[in-house]
Amino acid sequence: MRIAQVSTLYESVPPKAYGGIERVVSWLTEALVDTGHDVTLFASADSVTRARLVPACPCALRLIEETADPQAFHFAMLEEVVRRSREFDIVHFHTDYQGFPFARRLACAHLTTLHWRLDIPGLDRLYRAFDDIPLVSISNAQRKPLPGARWQGTVYHGMPADTPAFDARPGDYLAFLGRIAPPKRPDLAIQIAERAGMPLKIAAKIDNGDRWYYEENIEALMRHPRVDYLGELGDRDKHALLAGARALLFPIDWPEPFGLVLIEALACGTPVIAFGRGSVPEIIDDGHTGFIVDNVEEAIRAVGRLHEIDRGQCRAAFEQRFSAARMAADYLNIYETLLGSPHSREDACTAASLQGA
Image 1: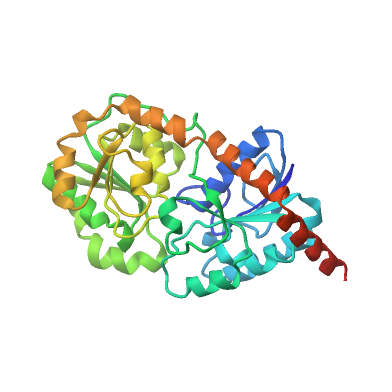
Image 2: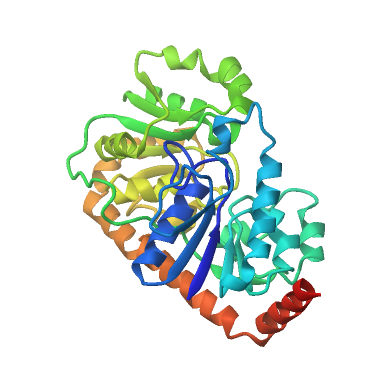
């Protein structure tokens, strides 16, 4: 099968440090290459892949965000995808609804995975206008605001099984990994660790748009003697941090569509203490791979129960449910369904005729 993967351009594929969508695109792309398919990746020029790379910008846009228009690069890339669409059997977009108008002009089948939250006012109207676009959700919780969309299925993220280090005997600290941003609630993670009497290691990115939140709400908390702020870590150091932690704290304050760090922790054998919002109950098995809680008090009590969790069971849950090979297999099933769909063939023929006109 000739498959095109179309990534966002804010980070390279894979990212050098923090990055969610581009990391998943990398894992999926390499897993598809492993299965013998002909894969083309549209991404930034500093991406690293065994697929055929079509560079859409000179480097990850976060590196030049102060001097460049990120949408200009994305629109130019999407037009290039349309121009080359006869080369593919299917194009898989990871660019949210930005790719919808372009998808209608492709000379082949297409699929869009939605990576963002869908409960934003106005999105329902947009998705009604593009109700012909086949979509994949990354959790069942994510799709609830838009039940009438053309959903093809839910595909949970997966990562390579040989990447993280499993550690059955962790250190004596808790971990927080992600972004310093209001929905992630690092302040609650600090409060939980402080009141539980445990050190907290924080590895987190601070986006320019969130710097105000860091300076006004978090910076002073970082001076607590039990808090160790490590900055933004690469994969090797990040996995070492997770593998050595007693637990990952995930006190989110928003309907997280997936939460990639959850499966990264499970891959290391590290249980998760998480607020039960968004996709969390679909990923964490309460009492077996961590604890799902509703507030800080329950999270503190969960820290005292971590001895009940078998770290080997956390790793086993990852291997069974969240591997890159499983993710690729799920997507291949959807690709084959779309390629066999009369609706899909009709759309591609219409687009091809328009391109030739």
